[in-house]
Structures are given as C-alpha cells and as structure tokens.
Length: 430
Image (spheres, rainbow, N blue to C red):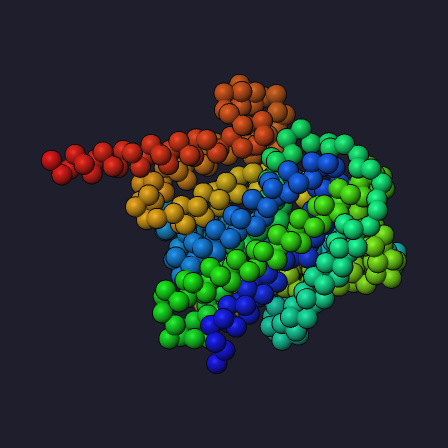
C-alpha cells in the first residue's frame, strides 16, 4: 500500500488530469491575445474562476466527503437534485461536444478535407463504444497523454516567453479583470470541482477504507492544491504567450488557430502537428469521462439500472454529434447564457460549503442561493434579448453591466441573514 504522501501526489495528478480537459487549452491564448499589456490583470480574473473557485470546491468536498448532491442539500434535497441534473445536462450539451469541435479544428482539418459532421459522428461513435465497454485503454490514454501534453506546453511556454517578440498591441478589454473572470466560466472548472471531488473521495475510500475522516480531509485538500497549482502555471503561461505574440497574428484569428500558431512559432510545424494530434486524443479521453460520469449518475438515480446507463450514453452521444459539428467559437458563444445562470449558483454553493458551519445555516443557504438565482437572471437574459430592454433593471444593479450583478446582493444577503440569526439567538436566551 502506498504511503499517504505518495497517495496525495497520485490523487493530485489525477485531479489535474481531470480538470485539464484539453478543450480548455484553446481559451487562455486568445484571452492573452486580446489583453496585450494587461495580460497579467486578465490572468488574475481567469485564475479566480478557473483555479481558485475549483480549489475551494475541493475544500468543500474535503469537508463534506459526500457527492455533488451534498452541496445543495441545505437548500433542499429537491433543489440539490434539480441543480445536479442541470449540471449534467449542461456538460453533456456544451463542453462534451466542444471536445469534438476542437479535435476537428486542431487534429483533422489541418490534414484532411472532411466535414465537421463526419468527424463528430466518428468521434462519438467511438466514444459510445468506450463508454459501453468501459475500455481500460481510456485510463492508459489519460495516464500517458496528459504528462506528454503538459511537457510540450511547458516547452512552448518557456521558449515563447523567453524568445524575442514584437511589441504588443493594446488591450481590447475595458475591464480586463472581469473579462478574465468571465472567460474562466468557459473552462467549466468550477463545475468540474463539484463533479471531480466526489470521484476522488470514492477513489480514496477504495484505496484505503480505514483512513480517518481527518486524514481524508487533509489528503483531498492537498491533492486539490497540487492540481490547481499545475493548472495555474499552464493557464497563466498560455495567457502570457498569447499576449507576447498578439501582434504577429491577424485580429480575426480563431482560438484553435492561435494555439496551433503559437506551437508552430516555438516548436516548428512538426511540433504543432504533434500537439494537435495529442490534444485530439486528450479531448476524446475527456469526452468519454464526461459521458461515463453522467451515465453513472443516471444509473444510480434509477436504482443501478443498466438500461438507464445505456439510454443516457446514447442520448449523450447523439447530443454530441448534433452540437459537435459546429465551430468551437459558436459552441462557446451559445454556452454563455447557461453559464451566466448556473455559474453564480455553483460559486455560491461552493463558498457556502467551504465556510464554517456557524456562518452557513440552512436559512443562509436558502436565502443566498435564492438571491444569487434572482440576480443572475438579468445576466442570463442579456445574452438572449437586446440589452436595451433590460436597461430599466440593470441600471439599478451595481456591476450588472459587467455581468456580475449578483455579487453584491449575495454578499449583502449573507451578512444580513447571519446578523439576523445572531440577534435571534441572543433574544432567545433572555
């Protein structure tokens, strides 16, 4: 049996691989490209939503040591179930198909003149076979591909950062910190924190069933810190690289074209092609993992029904084919409304489960989550209807123009409800 230190690093690397999601690699370079000299400010915002919030989610799991459903139970079990269902629907409808789109644009299109639909059909047909058979090759792919991709990325980042480049173009962002924060939503890492933490707890229990609650809590927290430090280095490096070379690409460059272009400038055309193939394979691994975890959830929901597992897998793959044929940029755009609505709820539930219990009673949970939902609706609607129609509402909400109108109301609600409970408790004593 491995000692605790070695186990911690093993789980940390496994978490990193789970969060890594090769489809996320296309996000940071373009963020840096558009930020120019403000790349470090953008990085701060991106890191908050793409690494710090997910890390706190893992701390929450360390405290609860249950499943994702535990995060919302203080609101109500019914709410928690609906919340989890929404999470799984979103990851199947958006980030999972996006892996197929990234694979087509980075791995297939540069070498073959085939349609995105054909790529998507083949991609999710293979994914279906892997999920149904739970092929061990998936574990092998994930175990060896991630370290290779990380190594190549680190080489690209080091060479790119320390190589001479042209002067940077000015930033296109009015509020770089907020732009970075909102772009971090597209990584789905906060959602991954909710999903992955439960898997780590199961893994720890399988490896060492006799481990105490306290020891598991420490191991989960340390493993999460290792994983997030890895993500921080990769994300920050790619943002910096996109900024340093932003004058050497067309302003209309796509996310996948920019990542491939940066790889070509640092490693040459062969290196870029090699990275493209590896990213495609890693995307496939991520897609299979998403489908498998979703099918497992619905299988458990329907009393370990194998039929539910199969039907869920079929639905996931058909959805993947339908959505995965579109361009990456389009999938990212259509994801925005749902992320504007669900991400504030994720962040609120993560933070509430991480703070001490004395500040997070059931009443606090219910009011804070309710306010987060209400004040997220204008941000959600802002991507569906003309913004002018929402002006009477948004003009009275601070930070609403930055799509963060929920932040201050949530904070105020948290403080007010806690003060109310404190006074209520004092009055009850007299």
